[in-house]
Length: 289
Figure 1 (cartoon, rainbow, N blue to C red):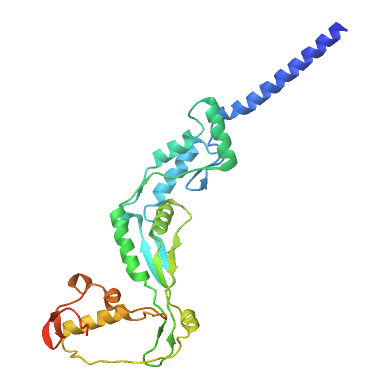
Figure 2 (figure 1 turned 180 degrees about the vertical axis):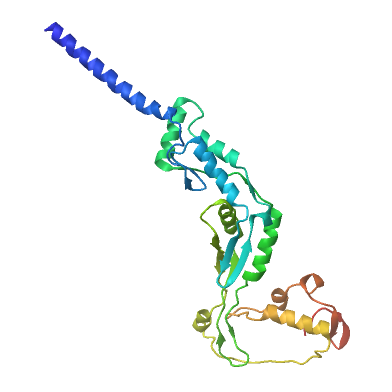
């Protein structure tokens, strides 16, 4: 009886010990894995299962294919060509390889097990080590802005026909997004074209808002005459009129010329010109009265 219980107890201990050994072995075994751990990516490119040599060859191939590569950037019918050399782009493949390979291989054994498990379940992505001339890329961005960006135009009433001229949405280049896409495309083997990201900017006044406000026909017209041969004065009138154009006054609101036009000085684009004020002639920057 006692012998039987002793044997049963021994079997229980052996079984428990075996289970512990299996669990420890399962946890520790990945520490001796001689390939890139599962879930490890560089630039969202899966590198799981590659040896150190294969990883090195893969990343160096990205660096090699940047030479002579040309990206096609487009928006609708507008196209730009861009080569890595134009912005001084270069890669550091050895540093990139070292970071990806060392993941799961540094720290205590417990930390390594946790890192390996995290990558397998959630993925662990690294960005390649790169260098580029930010000033050169910014210069190109400025050129692309001039070609692609536009300010939104409010809906207005036509002075000639009296109807509503519909609004025109604007657009703005998403510089940060485009920068990130370009840098990735330079070394990514499968990216050769990029659609330029633009944000649509809506005008403040739309045809719908004018219609809802009941502004659908011309209510009144006023005109004045001045000597258009006075170049500076003509420029001031045009600039002030552009700032006033499209302003909508709701019931109870007051129109302020000063608030609408702002400072009439050279810093704001106005020019020195003649002005008549209380029957006196003087120098001024705008035809205010």
